Length: 248
Length: 179
Image (cartoon, rainbow over all chains, first blue to last red; front, side, top):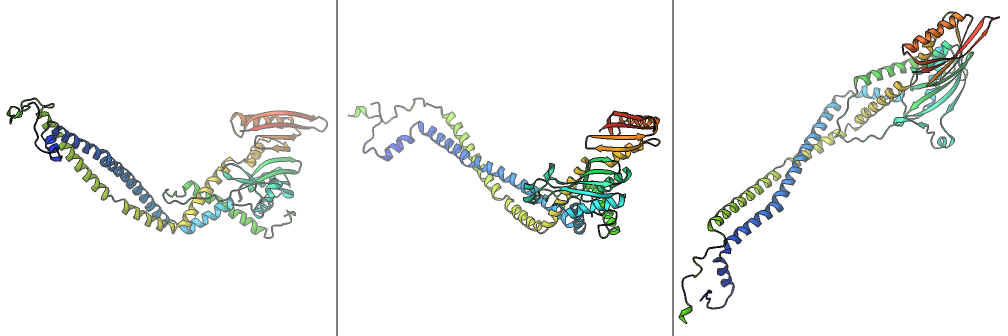
């Protein structure tokens, strides 16, 4: 007889013992263990490794943010608040966030008095009519800087005109004489006053706070001295409409 | 009936499809692999569980809260930096026509005077009057020197020269290209 003989019903036990005694059993067991290992590797270990790496990266990033925050807190706590307020005031006077026509006229008036020329006529050029009705928005230049142009006629010698330009240049709000057209004792000038609205600053805290550089502190000091010069000149002409400048 | 009964396994000596030694080594490999997988899983689980991330996040939140109390100072600092950067840019780029005039005046010789002047960001056109041609010549030479020394101007062009011999009155119109 070539095959096994099983007496009785061929049930579960029959097939179990048949499988266990079979030569494939050992291979099947190894295969099953191998498949289990592979499943564990792909379903558990690799995701866990990914999770661990992402957590590690997040930990490093969080540590870096904490370090930045701590540095920022230390920096802001040691900052001279009163000096910062003064610096902001100086910077905002030099480059106002909005058009300050009074300050512009003061600059021109004081410059005329100190340089010995008289102002005959002036005209503001703030933009077109539509812009005027929409809040007097001037021409927007680079970096969001807008300007108001004032054309004016000054009477005086060339030396006086030169001093006038120099005084305007070293006054705040900052301005620029862009054109001169002079003949005889009269010169027509185009003065451009700059302003820039405050930008929307996103305060995240993650970015390191940048201290005001020495160069900028020097600039603020210069601007402050310009401001003082203007104020000193204002003291000389308290009404702002001295006899030498009848228009103001 | 008894012919078919054989208590000895007829396949006993038959060769298996995989050698027993190879099966043993495969078992060993699988056991090692299973051990490795288990240990790695446990280690990774512990590493993930003991991560300090939550503590760090709490610390970060408290620091943010502390820093937010100085929000106005941070804004001021940012505004000062932004303003000064812009002001510096404007000041560096703006024209200095007073210096240009001073430079031209420094070259005026004798009784030469500037009677007319027109200037913009690129050019300066001026008329100089004198009772002496020598003064005008000296003035032009002075301007030429400035161009050669690359001070203020890159080009000097004489566009007109008029003279009134009876009144000894000469005038020259010059165009200067700013550097």
